[in-house]
Length: 433
Image (cartoon, rainbow, N blue to C red; front, side, top):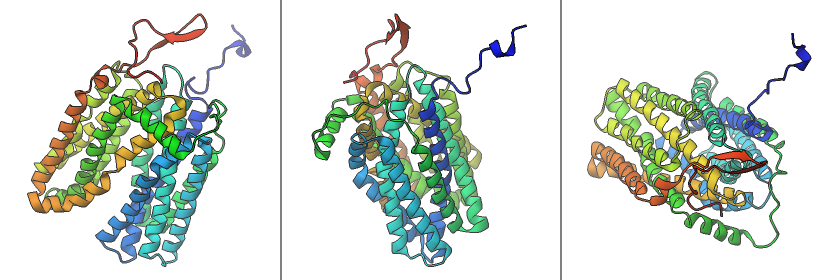
């Protein structure tokens, strides 16, 4: 019998799940768990302070505006200084703003302008945090298992989002919104502490010279020089906008008038969240060769919820549609992260992530603001069909970009002690720059 001491020890975690990856995943889970509950709590805090639906919209918009304004600057700074410092500083700002928000709500002294200001500070924090966090994650993962690592990371994020929304809603009902906001502040403190231990020694130091404007111009050249990159970002700037209009404005109205109220709509959103978790689980196993072709084809189902609300279909069918949409969206999400990881130089990751985020959120406030006038002008059913058609049209247009169809997953093997592209792998579109 082989002595127990001689038996090889099984690794506690996969080779691709290194220390940085584990810290990033754990901290993201914590902040997503707290943040999704706080999103619900903020709306109820406004209502409990005597606000109406318009005031809730103003507080939500207060977060989006600074997010859009500061994203590109945040990406440039995250490529200039150690990314974990940007992340920790942003978490500290979010922790402070949520803590003050919680105190105001718990003491009954929260006024609308104060809630808007504190929410805006949270948007500033996210604008600096998001490009740094995405750049850090993309630079941390190595090797052929990158897509699996991204899938597991997204599965943790989506699971926390579903759990956070459910837990936050229950806590608001049981204890009120103030304590949920306080819990979110604690979550930011815990996550920031974890991120302070990230190791950035693998990131090469940038040569001195240039300024923020120079960095932004360099990032723009990298972004604009890759047709597959800007085409997909433009696609999602439109797709995210119309999906936000359908989900945030039309969905609750259809639920109220046709489906039986908020309960069925909340159930449908829960099925969407479950679908995202299932999609991430699928992508831990599936590795499509043509990354963006597979991912873009999976964007077409994003039109289904708007079409289902336009009919409208029974609640059971709507839940099935939302689940399928969540699965397909995660297939795209993991494929997109893998493409960025494979194609973008490490020193430009955060700037590219900033342009990606900017495109994703810039039109959302416009679309949600125009949703009401569009319903008045064309009718709710026509507006919903319009949302579905727009998603189909912009997705079909992206498939006309040759680089989107041609970009392939880069496979590697170890040969003579060095990693090289395998013989059956085509040259990637655009190269690594």
